[in-house]
Length: 225
Ligand code: CA
Image (cartoon, rainbow, N blue to C red):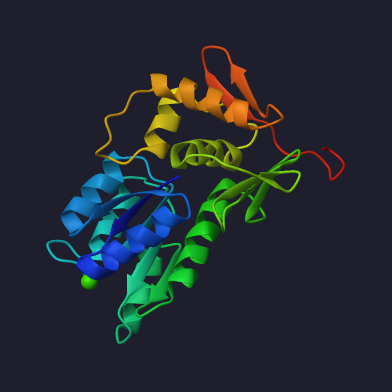
């Protein structure tokens, strides 16, 4: 899962990136509206955190351009405490949620998780596939309750597949959602990561769909494991 943070205050931007990275997301940052607008429209994100008070281009204009360009990515806006009207303009411009500064980082993380979950149509913060459970709150994976140690990239790959159950996800789509913009991307490494995950999980939940990509099956009933 890949997140874009558009925030001009360096300290807050750094804190947002650290907190989001900590729970398993890969994060790109932009410090002004123009750069943010460009990245949002040209890179693949699973959610965007957008400050409203931004230099060069304000957050409302950025959001309006995205929605006009038919960008459907969920967007959480950050508004200043004394600017209640920004919430209204932001939601009307196509924001999915908002937070008023100052906010608790835990709340922001919970809201971002909820946006991603809602966009994927998933009901819970714990994603299960048979005995494999991915906890999006902690960024941890367990099998029958026993923790599995995954690298950050392995986790992000598995998380992306588990957020899109029953969907065939191509290697290039996975590449776009597990690396940040500065990474030298190579879709051949996806196969390497998938094989490593398969070795670490006692059950094989990632199906290869020849020539197309990978698929994790949607969880069946409670007695599926
Ligand atoms: Ca600002």
